[in-house]
Amino acid sequence: MDAELSRRLTRLLDHVEHWLPPAPQEVDWSRDVAALWQRHSLGGHLLPVPPRDALSLGDLLGIERQKLALVDNTRAFLQGFPANHALLWGSRGSGKSSLIRALLNSLAPEGLRLVQVDRHDLGSLPLLVSQLRRHERRFVVYCDDLSFEGHDDAYKALKSVLDGALTGPPENVLLYATSNRRHLLPESLDDNQASQLVGDELHHGDAVEEKISLSDRFGLWLGFYPFNQDTYLEACCHWVTQLGHAHDWNAEARAEAIRFATLRGGRSGRGAWQFACEWVGRRRLHEGRR
Image 1 (cartoon, one colour):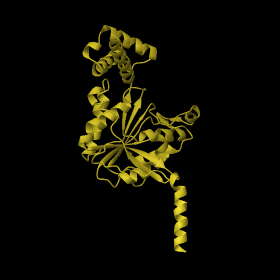
Image 2 (cartoon, helix red, strand yellow; image 1 turned 90 degrees about the vertical axis):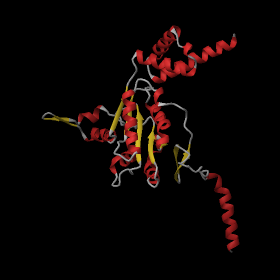
Image 3 (tube, one colour; image 1 turned 30 degrees about the vertical axis):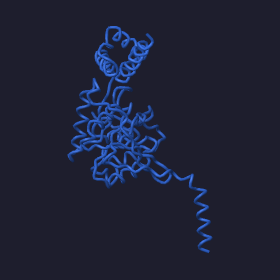
Image 4 (cartoon, rainbow, N blue to C red; image 1 turned 135 degrees about the vertical axis):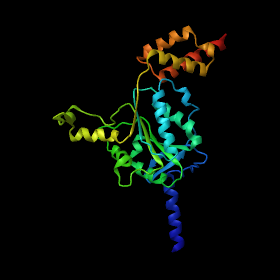
């Protein structure tokens, strides 16, 4: 009877094996500096990933104040001093995500480890944090392009981990997020109709208080803004020189960089990088055809 049961269980496992998630690659935090959190029906696991590039803090121009604040906050955290969760918000392409990547490249030798969580996997954030709690290393849990729609309840898991649960986040975990919105939940006109002025004080309605309270749990707010023309051209010069040669940046390149930004309707660090790729790539291509 036992042998028959064993054969049946073996056949059953053969049929369901392809439905099971693949065995995750083990993260070695002495070697790996970054990982992705992948949620699945049985919970979730960490997948080690190499750094995307060699971007350095010195490559990021026009955001000196933001760089200094985030580096100081992160170094304090790594050394066991008080530090804040950070929300990097502002205009698209202004260097928010790039600053996180450069931060990892610069501070990984000092002990920084990064775990990226997709917004759609935030419901399992408490599970991830409970796993990281057991490690001696210090982690920044990072969510890129964070925002929520009005019907999205995933923000509640983030809100709880940030400040709401009885235990709170472990002392070896900080949360960093980037967003185009300062307030991560959308506000409607109806939300503000419940607000009232009492004496000299503005009292928001419950809906507005709920939406503001999520962003308010990030102790460090860093705003990112469109570049002025001088900063944009400085960034273009930097990337053209980095990707090509010093002589690739000239009066013609400057004029084309201004035209590139005008056609795109804005100036940003991302735009400077994209212009440099186009300009240097086209010049090398034409040189090869001569």
